[in-house]
Length: 64
Image (cartoon, rainbow, N blue to C red):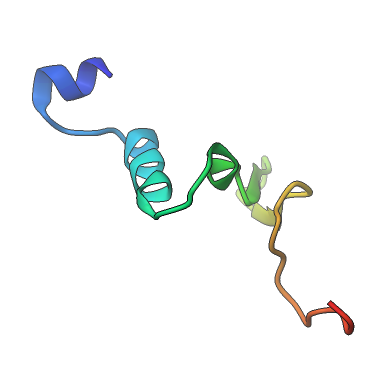
């Protein structure tokens, strides 16, 4: 939080926290990462949906 007190600006993590907690009814769980990023030595970046993500892309299961 020193960045806020000294410069009046938020860093990226503070901005994310602010955006995700601003919605009514939001909880700390809303801040959980939804993706994982892995960078390999050959310059390839892999982005996956996190196992802990509550919402996942794709067709919804029938019956839900």
